[in-house]
Image (cartoon, rainbow, N blue to C red; front, top):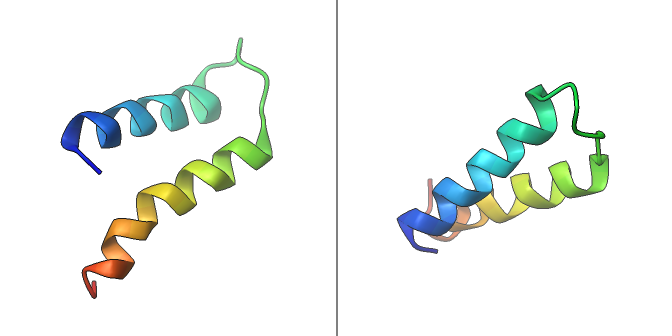
Length: 45
């Protein structure tokens, strides 16, 4: 995953968690967290 993709996913996650005008979508939050965690797992971190 490129740095741009990571930044985009982090921004979306931030918006979902912190923007009071955006409806919480728990499934999307968990999906984003899984996607962001996947590179670290593959790298052995």
